[in-house]
Length: 273
Image (cartoon, rainbow, N blue to C red; front, side, top):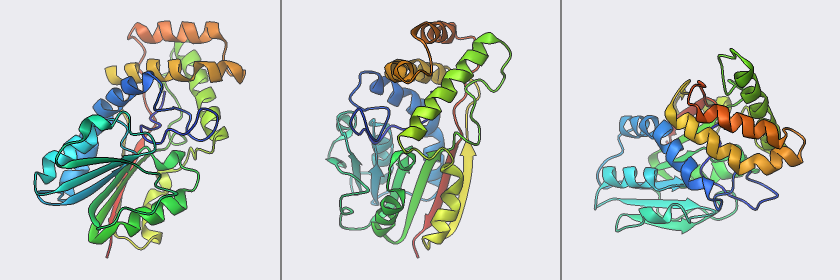
């Protein structure tokens, strides 16, 4: 539904709502890559990530970001891609990309120091966000850059910002139910907007941020259908929607005539002194 994230798939009944192991996860990763990779790499390139550098990609989910980082650092660089569930990221492994199972909030940071630490749609789902952020910064070498990208559903809560008819109203009601499920599992629906302040408070320099969200995109349609199928049982079990409503919504989405948005993706970055 929204852009909650590729990365941290916990068990089915606690932690992360959208488990990496479900078949829809691969579809979601592809749609998220289409929607957000261009912005991620615009930031990566502006931050000067280039040949020979070391990068840590946290909550990698699918292979697209590790592969893009590997293309930039080249054979003399290194990319470490980590996740709690690495089944979807494994395809990115090669001479430059190492894929490891790792819990950013619980496991020690990888040694060696990184020029870039990047996490997209990860921290919003991590219970101990403060500890995860501390470990990310600890992993930076002096002068290294942290790039965090997280959704802020509270800034723009609607699936259909142009609520022009019953199909759009149903879509927005189901989106509201999805947010309730996320919040019940500890997701912070207003986390994205806090990133610049958190990076400054953590002692990083040159902190900046921007935000992006598509309002109508074929990838949003793909993402919505896969997400609803992934969580439909929980929506029904929680009394947030009926099977009939979900079936109707999926039919409406399949027409391609709904203008579907995502939550804003806030990107914030800063440099370790």
